[in-house]
Length: 136
Image (cartoon, rainbow, N blue to C red; front, side, top):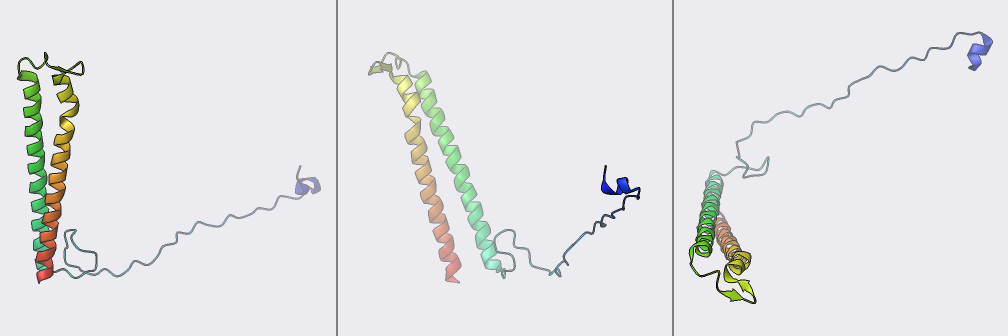
């Protein structure tokens, strides 16, 4: 039993505080030119920069799609060569058929070559973009 119940008094009622929602004032909205993700918010937008940036994005997309298409073609040719060249199973190196070795190890150099070519060409595209942008 509580102390107040022993004395015969009614327990005191404690009021819980009401919930209050606290919010911050919203900042005044400014109308800004659309940047389409190429400039920092609040930065002035130059139409020439926007045109160059869109051209760079299109160029990088073409490069990526061309690289993927070339890679797929080379991999398919290599896989078809392994599958269709007669007598490849009879050639062995270190006791392993040549077709197995080609399937296991020939694709890695192809991946590396395409990765290096893509990275170098993408860097060249970006370097040209910076040169065009800085000329103005």
